[in-house]
Image (cartoon, rainbow, N blue to C red):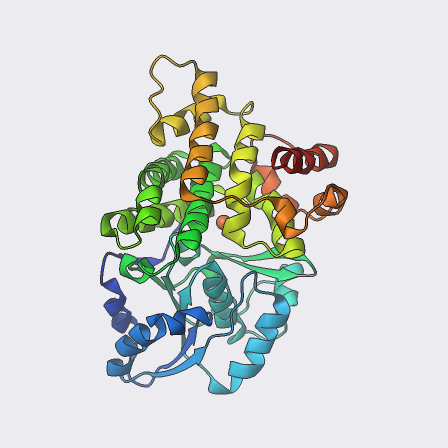
Length: 382
Ligand SMILES: [Fe+2]
């Protein structure tokens, strides 16, 4: 079997690497800075502007990105920015800002509404504008992936393909120091779910395995520290690196059950992406255990469990307990009921899964199993 690996993003990693944004800009560039409203308040927008300004490039701010961005939101953004005629896009923030940045960069050079590309799979005829992605969370990995996820008609839909790769990713853990505890925990659990899904999925290969294993080790060893003290530089750096490695692994190997069953919880019950994945990860691991116990046994070891003397099955079960402990220690307790999901919603939710990621999951799940899966979670959380 042929293994393919393609990742053309120019990644700059390390404290202070934000200043390297200047390497990608020139006098005369019209930069569109895409972000969410919260980042201006904590001073991060000004830090980016301070790097852009000396290059002689212009900068226009678009700061209306919301969690789980929709196709309507993207179309409204295009109306607002088209006359500016940007030459480059800088996306600053979590996954939502980076995904909107990617799509806007593509729509600036291609005719037609987003839904043409989203639902019909129409390829972009022209190369998108160059996009420089600057993550402010250690979670999404979108800065190194060829996918943007936008919600349309209550369904998360990916816009995929090599054209969607950012030109560059500036991964500066200093920008993550002000991230609140809850977001640090939930986005960190999202990154861990990327690494675990890549490692147990059917698309795993030796290259993605190496990245996923290191990502699990780094995130498992640093998530507590980053939550205990957001100013812990070593923990923030390790989380940032773990998130990048997990992002590359998932882009090449594919995702699975966690991202499948979390999708309708975001669209119907407005859970944040990381929040939903954080809650579901341990249940999905438990469901998948019988498919690849040896891989879950590896995960236990990578998460710091001493598996010496354990059988493969005991070690595999210990990986679920280790993730549960991570959740407990970071304080992420999110009953689905608190978002309004009831037993009577299980059928609706199961009818609205983005099924393509299930193809990569090591264990199949039919609708009846899916309904029961959600019911079991609701019962467990009571
Ligand atoms: Fe994710």
